[in-house]
Length: 64
Image 1 (tube, rainbow, N blue to C red):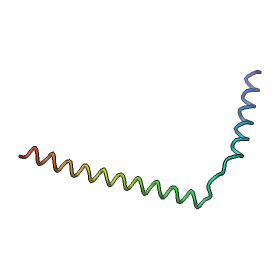
Image 2 (cartoon, one colour):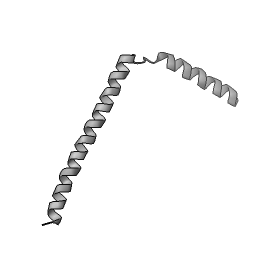
Image 3 (tube, rainbow, N blue to C red):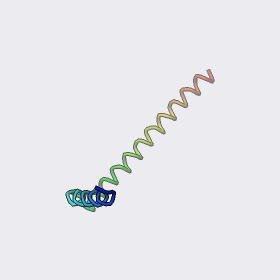
Image 4 (spheres, rainbow, N blue to C red):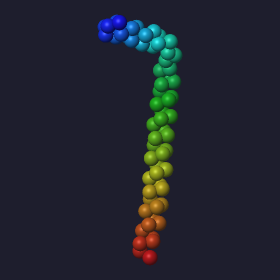
């Protein structure tokens, strides 16, 4: 089997597998994206709050 046959088989197999995929609807994609953005903002705020609290704690220890 030469390299061109291997490439052809790979592409045909990939195409066949892509036809089996159940793609999300537009609304599902929007919802999933909003969940990701919301969780990212939530985690960023959480770590910002932790950083602020630890900064106050370290500042209090240094200025003691």
